Image (tube, rainbow, N blue to C red; front, side, top):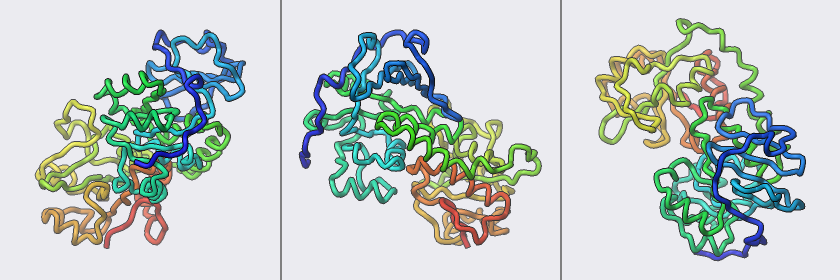
Amino acid sequence: MRIRKLFPLTAALLLVTSCGRQQTGAELGAVGSMELRYAEQFSVDYRADGCAVVSIGEDSFLVVPEDVDVPADSAGMTVIKQPVGNIYVAASSAMDLFDGLGELDKVAMTSTTAASWSLPAIREKVEAGDIEYIGKYSSPDYEYLVVENCGLAVESTMIYHTPEVREKLEALGIPVMVERSSYETHPLGRMEWMKLYGLLTGDTEAAEELFDAKTKAFGELSVADIPDRERKTAAFFYITSSGYFNIRKPNDYVPKMIELAGGRYIFTADDLNIDDNALSTMNIQTETFYDIARDADILIYNSTIDGELGSIDELVGKCGVLADFKAVKSGDVWCTGQNMFQQTTGAADMICDLNAVFTGTADGAELTYLRKLD
C-alpha cells in the first residue's frame, strides 16, 4: 500500500470516551437543534459553546470546532475535534454523500474495492490510490489506519456483526460512527444524512443547500391522494443465477419509493412467507412470482447484481414464462442503472423517475436511473 503524507491531527484532538447514559439536550446545554425533515435515526443538538452533540442510537458524539477547547463535560461521549480528515468510510452508502458535498478529499480509506464501485468519481479515486482500499470492513488494515492518522471511521450496521473490529478501532484512538441510514423508514431520510456529514466536515450550509436542491422536484409531486385502486402496480426484481426471483421485501425502502412515486408495489406481506431476518430482499420461486406479478402493470428489473439488460427479449430469455406477463405484452418493462443503490444522493431523483413511469410521462423523457426496454 502507498503511504501518504500524514494529516495534521494529533492524538489529543481525538478522544474516545466510554459510553454512558445518553444525556438530554437540556442537560448538554442545547440552544437549538438541526432541522431534519425525514431522517429519524440521528439528531444534532447545538450548544452555546459552539459544540454539537450528535446522537445515533445509543451513541453520543461531541463535535468540537477547531478553535474551541474540548469541554470538561464530554464524559460519556466520543469527542470528534475538527477539522476531521483522513476518514475511513466503510459504509458504502455514505461515500456518495461525501462526494455530493465536495468533501471526498477528506476521505482517505474505504472497505470497497475499485471494481465494486459503480460511481465513476469514486472508482477513479480508489484506482488512483487517492482513496485507499484497506480490506473488508470485518478485517481492515489497522496498521495503515494508524499510520494514516485516521480521523474517523464511518461504519455501516454490518459492524454490529463484528464488534471486535469496532473495539479495536476505538482502542487505537479512532472514533467510530455507525451510520444507520439503512434503518430510515423514509427513503429521503437516508439522503438527509448528508447534513450530518456536512456538520462533520464543517460545511453545514452546503449540505442544507444540496439537500434542498435534491428534494425540490420530489416536493412538487402530488401523489398522496391517489387511491390504491387507481395506482399502477409494479414488481421490482432480478433473476438469480440459480433461477430464483429476488424481490424487495414489502417493508423495504424501494417499495416505499414506489408508493411515494404514486405506484403500488405488487407484493404484500400477506402474499409472502417472509424470513425473519434483517435482509431487505428475499428469493421466491418462479411459480410464486408468476402468481403474484403476472398482472403487474409495470416490471422493473434491478440490474445492480445481474447487469443491465438490452431488451425485453433478453429478459424473457432468462425465464420464458415472463412472456405471459401483462407488462411484457404491453411493453412497460424498465431496467435500473447499476449506480442506483450506491448513489445515495439520487433517492429523490429515483422517486421522480418512478413517478414519470407511473404517470405515463416517461416516454421520451431523460430519466436518471430507469431505462425502458424495447
